Image (tube, rainbow, N blue to C red; front, side, top):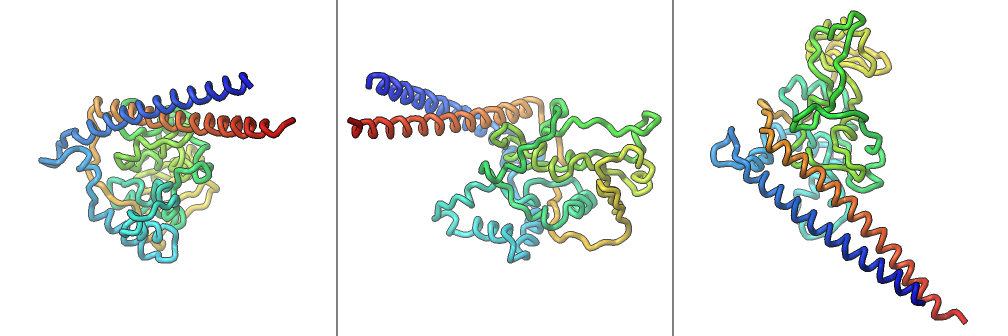
Length: 311
């Protein structure tokens, strides 16, 4: 019986310690988020950096309108629910456990990029709902294996430049599609339970290593170094299985919103974003440890109660 009491006491101490750690992490996260919100904007007088990044643009409004037109989709239902007063009065898990709709999680620099990337993914993928729960992120847990572009505030993936047989980078190559999307300020620091961000999980799963070129001719000349598909800003598309698509096509109604003139952030802000990302992941791991210890305590207390009936 003494051993049982000792084990119970140890578990309770572990839980208290982990809860204390979680609270400290929450305070650190809040402090960084507050500082980020106070960062002065160079583009909008009188607005903080956070306010500038979170303000909704006309392009984002158009994207949301197009989503709402798809009335029978889960994406439209989710948007309508979150915009209603009902969402603030009901504590529904499905609403809290969603990160968002793919089409609203990122923006791009211009209409040409928006059109071609959205068309590549297709309407079903653009309307897909991304979840926070372990069940919802199972498909996201096979992330890109590699590093990030140094000091990049958007955590772009350090993918190698495509090379022709002669060793030169093909003419007209712009970037990989996965690096041409701009994640919202609040989503750059979002991490899955495994500590990975949306770019190296969700968007890498969607775009893989699809290359983007200025013209179709550039894309065709680069065929020897294209392995996972390619796009061109004038409408060329090559899927990874080698199917080409040229000429006019039906545009996908729901497209990524446009944020022109995306600018890099100062190094101190980049460091703050990275620190925030790590703290949020640490907090997620501590919370998982608390749940495990609570389960052990419940099991132990159940055993203790059962022993009372033993002869």
